[in-house]
Length: 320
Image (tube, rainbow, N blue to C red; front, top):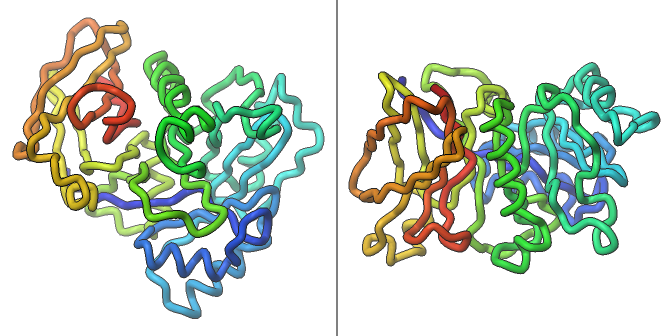
């Protein structure tokens, strides 16, 4: 199947809540940076949606808008995409949040996810850590496995807990839960121009829907991934995993040493077996045999050694 890759930034704020950019400024910044798809997810308000739609229409910006909201509580933050209503937070029980998830869905949410669930939390950032007890993961669609609001590097990852969140997501999907993985800039102001993880949706070439709807559909199919390196498509066929790489991202412009590095593919399956494969950047297609004893695996792509600082691409789950 022929596919294309749709970039999307799914976690953003404006002066309608606690951001420093007006709605118009955020939309124009997103167009300048070629976001393609942007979700407006202000804290506990949907007041910016009409302004965003008007800005895109009036200024003919090359953007597709996903209306959303970040339901912000003392027990964690929940992202609801595809909705233009703010669901009443009264009655939310952190021990049984499933009823709130259902209310989000009834209020129009197409997909529901967790924002920065392993953030440092109290006392530094009260409410940012996800402290609710989830009993039915089927009511959630995705997890923000990378949040880059604090920048990049060891200190910011320790603050936000990206490494713990990615491992948690991997554990969940290997136990059978169908959660997509995304990254979130969590934009509150114009950020520094640094490399960061981006969300891409793998979209069938014949899909002619609005780009925002395509991204929501990819989340529902678990066909998203996060990357600061190559774009990746994957398919399981006849007991083999096929991977295709597209190396057109700017990563290959600023990292001039990549040609001298042997990329590594790391795989962990649902039997807890881990494998590593040396790859070649010049190979556009990779074929790997899948173990008969397993039924699912998660993938990470590294730039050289398999350590956190070299992580290029993650959030890929394959099933067979």
